[in-house]
Image (cartoon, rainbow over all chains, first blue to last red):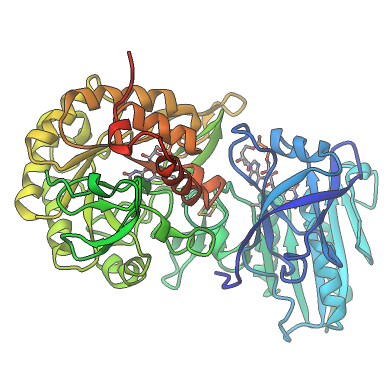
Length: 264
Length: 329
Ligand SMILES: Cc1cc2nc3c(=O)[nH]c(=O)nc-3n(C[C@H](O)[C@H](O)[C@H](O)COP(=O)(O)OP(=O)(O)OC[C@H]3O[C@@H](n4cnc5c(N)ncnc54)[C@H](O)[C@@H]3O)c2cc1C
Ligand SMILES: Cc1cc2nc3c(=O)[nH]c(=O)nc-3n(C[C@H](O)[C@H](O)[C@H](O)COP(=O)(O)O)c2cc1C
Ligand code: FES
């Protein structure tokens, strides 16, 4: 659990950048949050001032640029649609910083493999920047359905895979990783990942079988983001080897691949 | 029921010491619910929506509130239901948390120390599988300091008895209340479920058995379905509906119970702001609890408390005590 102070502030949209017909980036003026939020953490946003939709929406921090933070949104329902359409000047009530961070400060790796699927690329830009500053080598593996869905904003050194083969490798991202892994022989590796749970599950299994250190940023329904609703449990292997509920907003959202259990 | 000398101090705030030894700020909206449960204002945090207060502390000044009702405490540690256990619905949400909690022993050791420092009344919400469970939890808490009262959650199945929900049965409600009344001199608030034919009948059973107050409503049974997968959205299949969507139901139930009983009624269900809270006072609530809205705006209860106090401190405005149940028909 993060011991950082929490803030609940109205953040003004200063720019709405449409990347695709379903994905955008909101640039938010956040002089209080920008200096304190860390790679892997998320914010919880009230998309409007009404009872519909009622609850806030959890979103990763995409990048921090000066006193601004950026969030990247993919439309899946009413809340993300409102955020995609948000006009410049809108104030979004935002709770931050929430959750733990990626393990970017560890000194047991030199090469970071950033594996993302779909909107899972959102937190990777900040992670890449953070890792490069620490002198790490960064390689991106990005999976998507089709070429137009491959989003690379803020990322370099990219290996892409698409389901339909319209860009890069044809097939899923874990198979691409399997094919390319030998070229990193002898390097001290660590995998950082974010994407749909199904992708994370097969990636976690792949890494665990090979003893490849891996951490995954997980999604779950969240009622509050701060540990008061108990609505966000994920299954985590405890010291007794058995599965236990852990509140994702407190325990994660970044969890070690050896601990997370996907089957319910 | 004990009535504090609050009416005398309606217009000017001052500190007094109550029967349970806590200092008590008599604000213009101060109210006593009886048996030492004296509130500096009538705004409480609802059970299950604020954990044990720790997480909210940095975002909301809990000492400004009348009290906090803790997450339900049971005899044993409960992990709760498997995910998915929450889903948003139109202007509301369904939950099937499964009464996940740390258990009474961990609660005393790990949660009470910080609860004692909140500067507000601590009401412990209690859940059990049988009458004996309730009795054992209350007995265990009796010599624990810093507890102003108990809220008894009867919206759970009596697995040791006939396996029906305690709160839907007047006899079971009466039995639990009577048993606990014998054990504790502390304030006993019985929490009522709206999933019954006559909520007034259950409220009367609680009153007759020695309850100091009743609180309502607990969540309404509801369901969300995904037609594509033909599956229920919640692992538990059904869940409890809360939030703005339930407010009209809650107002009707509070009004019904207010007319039936003499003990104080604590109202809740979909309160999101000052206006909502005031509506509950008009239909007879002596205090209110704020639940789901804490998830949306963590400091909302403080805001409501300040506005309620402000309203009743204004010159020429009505007295809080005469505003309660003032519905004109
Ligand atoms: C820690 C975390 C970080 C996230 N980061 C991003 C991000 O950077 N960019 C992005 O586009 N999305 C992100 N998501 C997913 C995003 O929160 C959901 O897509 C969004 O809540 C959907 O809301 P909606 O109203 O559009 O969809 P609806 O389907 O209408 O939402 C209904 C309810 O389900 C919840 N919900 C639906 N899908 C998800 C989901 N995949 N994960 C969690 N809750 C969901 C909603 O919050 C809401 O309570 C993140 C989720 C988590 C938990
Ligand atoms: C996630 C969640 C958990 C809850 N847990 C409890 C509980 O443990 N004990 C209890 O008596 N009521 C519990 N409730 C019910 C609330 O205390 C309250 O009665 C109900 O939600 C209606 O108020 P609201 O609309 O303001 O939320 C819970 C409600 C929610 C939303
Ligand atoms: S989102 Fe509410 S406890 Fe985690």
